[in-house]
Amino acid sequence: LAHVTDSKCIVRYTMSRKDVDEIAPKTIICTFVQLGFFSKRSDECVDLLDQWLYSLKHMDALDEVPDGFNSEEMSSLYTAAEIALFDGEKRIKYEKAMMYERDYNNDMYYSRKEGIEEGIAMGKEEEKLANAKSLKQVGVPLEKISQALGLTVEQVQAL
Image (cartoon, rainbow, N blue to C red; front, side):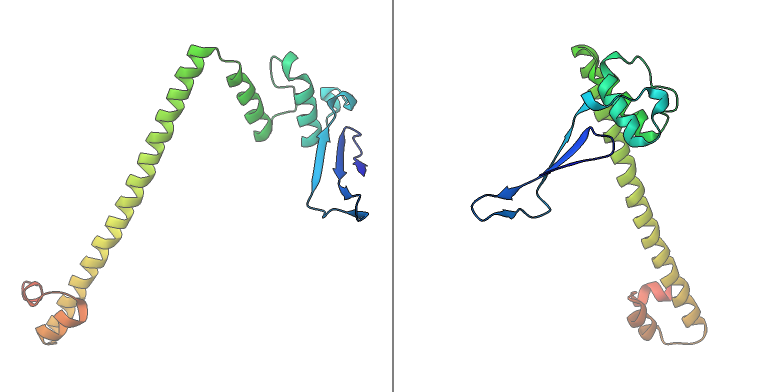
């Protein structure tokens, strides 16, 4: 069973079981893109699907992104195609640079996360000490302050 979209180049097939004469679940679908049926020029592409189909059909002949194909998705596609054309040595250099950049970004992310966690912990400790000092000033016994805030009696005395 085939369903052809309006563009006539995307065909979706569903499956059926011959032995029981029933259609398979709707989750079992095969989709084929028949680029030979796509006939629009770049200036006739009106949506992202048209741009993808045009780009895939003409990728081997394109030197640059066609006018009007300036979405983030199209930019990523053309960048990936350009990278795919790198020769062996250039590809290795590129992949090493990308690994270095990812490692650096990972290190920065986790360092920042640890810094934030450390800052929060320090803030909580400072808040505990400030609360202990306030309680001490109003005459709450040191043992009670120590017990309530998880500080040692010596820490409370030093305030």
